[in-house]
Image (cartoon, rainbow, N blue to C red; front, side, top):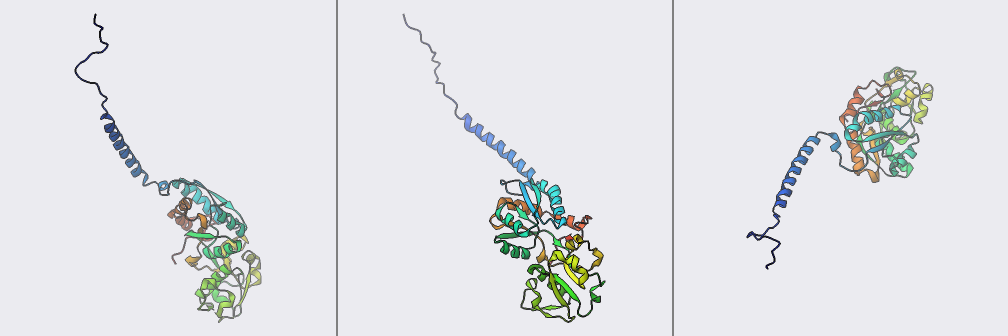
Length: 303
């Protein structure tokens, strides 16, 4: 008796059709490419995609507590601009400029907005740290105040002028006086670095004295003119009607977004630079009616 076979021979061999898989992969790859292309096109208009992917999304940015308008600026940026770029900004105040710059240099704070590049150089040297200034943010209202005279033209021969005693801001005050034709500086000196000793022309016989910026409001009645920041005279309860000249400050004295030098080229720094470069910040400075900002912190000047 013949043992029956367990299979059936139909004249052909069964094989797996492996050609299905390459076609499937190709179709899937094509679909993914199309979907990704659509997503990229949709996201090009989103500011959050303008910054490089990666890094963190929460940032601490320092301001000078005595300058209340600086905190207002950071609050505006944090509430109105930063969310569109996918980040959060926490304003942090620290009064001491040396400690503040040390905190920025070490990365404890991500950046600061409280100083222009020339004061930064002076302060960073004192703190023994390396800082890098980047985008310009705003300018401080800076001018002449007097409780005795209503205009510069009224100043008598031999009037006493009170200037800031720190190098950076004394240079700004002297340069202001030179631009107004009230005195002349040594032509071999860069004006922004000028000191009282560099005055070579003083046709009005002005007596030049110096004091700490914070002391100027309470010293105003003892001199004919004091030259400093609007914010500090505001804080000292000196009315703006006592201001007799508010020229537009040179752009070189604009506040900068400043980083510790070792962090200035990072993806995270680029995120903050893009946020603070948003044109809405300059528009806010030009249009706000907040008394802590209006006339105190102004848009960056053209020159």
